[in-house]
Image (tube, rainbow, N blue to C red; front, side):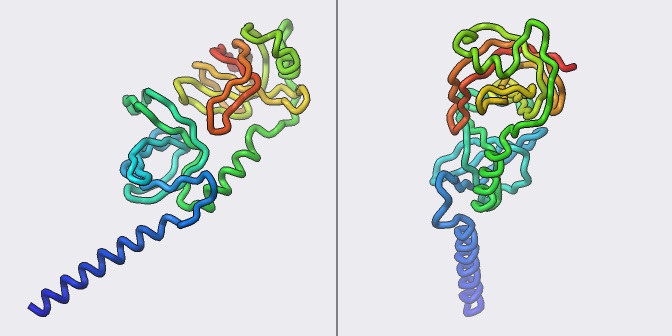
Length: 231
């Protein structure tokens, strides 16, 4: 009987210790805007990881750049873009609500640094010179003539400097051509056509102004529903 009591006490202390150990994974004071979530389940696909997570008793899905995680682990993220009724062709699953995040990390400090680094490295200006198309536009012209071009279809030639595929049912392409208007040298293009980082492409799309997708993703000028031809 005495041995049984000791065994029970050891089990109880073990459970308490495990609980305390798990709780210490979530710091009391997180950096502003940082979320700490517990992974319930996860699914890896090429370039992305989908995670069902829990935060303060609320369960939801997030997706971000592929990362190695384990169910039950606590991870961190900050910048996120909410999507409604998003369908993943790879998973053959429709998410009523999902948040696409810039990064998923195992520590709040790493998340904070990752966010800063990503913002600093967001399509840096490249020293390139792209021969413009005859009858087409340059990035400098699109920005400087944006009010007259709104809603119109333009053609431009540029280099792909950033590429994110399959988000919100489309591919997100940043191009540069070596021209600029003020501090604007980078142009966002959304398209169903695929390309690759570093490719020179010919793009034909509709000029849209002042698009705000939330979480800091806002663009004074972009091209939508574009046709992209790889050279």
